[in-house]
Length: 240
Image (spheres, rainbow, N blue to C red):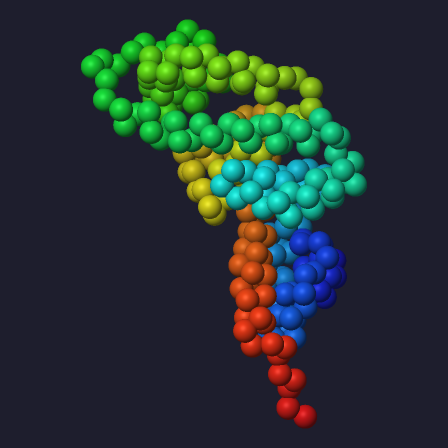
């Protein structure tokens, strides 16, 4: 693959904004090093192009990020690389479950007189691993929020339909969203890493998915350099 920093950046970020053009003039040495860092975290060959874009979409669309420009870029690139409408919808719809992280964190903080029994529908199978990570959560939710619990279980049945993304990629959607730097929900990520491996993901695929949380750091530079340019104007040319 090319080592040209501009080409590397465009492969990860799409067409470069004026802020990137400005930074290329202001600090080309940094841009070259940074482009190499992004490329190393982005370019793992174990991910097919459309899967990479779908996982990047999971990052940019999750409720703790909501990068509209990134979402538009990733959906366009995913479709161009062969993703189906169903696969794109799967990613977006799965991400609605990120809302439960406030519940899994908050509901155990509410005192109860006695621990309620786990609902029959959450015993064994897929839910056994969930209960290990979040012991008693489903029982408390069912007791304290019975209508919300029933609706949550109904949503889960729809989201885990058999068509669309294979299970290992569904789990890695959650890994990327959980490990976005704006979220860092370690317990959820650990559960979904284990599930992805159980559904056939390789360690290399899991690591590659985790690496896709890195490209978003480019937004720090883009926003900051644009503000700097507004204050200082164009960079000064190097001395002759």
